[in-house]
Length: 184
Image (cartoon, rainbow, N blue to C red):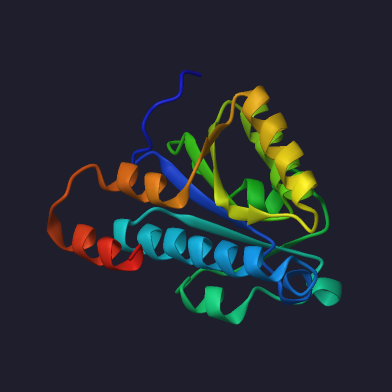
């Protein structure tokens, strides 16, 4: 599939496993930045009616979604999973819309769940865009390796600001004003 600009009517945002006990073992400064960028994506998706899927990996052991992030995801119910690839969980797979060919990925960990999900989405014929500033691993080298592997597999590696401005497409309207405030 030839990469195209992201479009609001073709995109879905998948936020993977941003859970309290996982957050505690991530590099602190990187985690703060990751949460901020994931929040920007979540809020922009809400403003632009981009559907959001949220997962939690074994919440009994890893806790639930970060409360601050969850507050930005009004009406989004986390889907529990124990598999690493989100596509391997039937409840998640059912939430992907057939008419939404572009999947934007954010969350953790980059070298496990993000990587396996991205590769499975590519195999399923989706255009995958990874928000590099909204993914994280415990070890920066593992994230770098995952990003390189996803890029080599054909994923688009981008950043949250580029993604939301591709969704917007133009510098006008209420959504543009609100999103411009988010990224300041």
